[in-house]
Length: 352
Length: 262
Image (cartoon, rainbow over all chains, first blue to last red; front, side):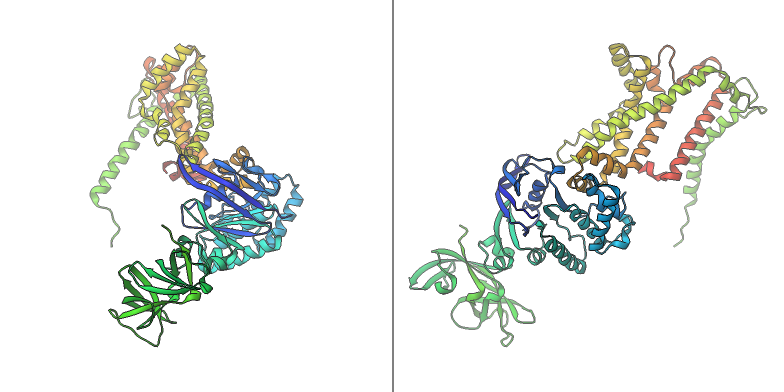
């Protein structure tokens, strides 16, 4: 049975420091949602609140029909996978997996049978009698996964489960986690600071900053249509150009940068453009050429990317990164123009 | 690169070693001396001072008292010390930093002061039986070892293991007993041994807290020396040394001696 997880207007404090500010989050039944952000953004706090290791100052946590807000942690019935595996060092692999079943009062034979079956599923049958110390990092994390899954929890939570593994293993493990999560249809909350990991594994991703969710959406939407400057910068829109509209002519909007450069943008491409906005672009989205319509710049350092040349571009309003074609090699100090590639740019509300 | 020691270092180390070990051999010699007074080098050879220990009932009764006090006092100290060490480590961030130092105070305060103040407050103030007073005094004396040594193993303990147990449906107290305790057992054993030896050897606190009819072995040794000054004391000391060596041998065999100095 799959259930939804709902966090409603959660506020949390460490002492007098506010770490979560009016956070609301709804995870649909069977869905895997990631909390993504740098350290200190509140993602782990959120997970620990749901696990019951912390109590919110206000707000409610609901898992299906159950209210978890003030429920003791050991009664919540949540499968947890930790960053450092957190296996019981004094128990064998099988006993580690069977631990949760034992707490649920299952008899010895049934426990062993279920634990063995689960170890089979994660491909560790032959390691059942080993002690955790005799396993590699990847094997340990599989045991931790088996231990969390075997109790058939309505909610699975992952706290940076792959950050202690090497790059190759990380990719294998995230596919493994996704496979098992899909097979069981278990509602899941996944915490990570790794964007690629979050985007590859999740149905939806919540990008967090300073105790708030900045945007919660499908990875594709986050990547292509960030809703604000923070998310834009997070997903690689390195150029954020503040602009003001000076004229509107039907669908065509004329706007100027702080340095006075003029751009013509079409509302049929970008949608409604407010009077003050930020034009966000990855280096790919700003085409460097010697002449044409666009933002006049002075070129700085040139780097070779294989598919293009990347130029550091200086304007009185700030520095930008733009890409130029391989066919035209421009030297530092050259005057050039930056032209936004409409389908690769975003219009964001102005921060100020 | 030659890996040899400087001669001066070798000589200094040897001298220190001799200074540490020599008195123990002197005691051994004095214990078998066939004279009625303590002397070294021994004159003649006899084992009668060893058998004399068992003829003086005070040695037997005080030895039993000492063992009881050491065992139950250490047990009591661990009963308080383990939860204290747990709390100090688990909630380190939220607790003031001076709090852990409070538990070391019994080591820092001169034992003679501790003994006197315990006599004033517990023996006279609360008027408790002598045995109970001794027990409390020794528990207090060894509490720092319990907190410090158990705390050292908890400092390297990963508390997410405990959280894992709780998330799997294990109530907190049970999680402590079934998951935390087995993983710090080496620290608990080391704390027990250190505390036990400290308690068995204590003089200053016992001096103030012993009373009519109840005494500890070290106090009895002092009393015997004041009255007789015969080699019996040396032979008792040899037995105490053997007990310590025995305990250390067990520690070395099970945990390794370096464990105690960690």
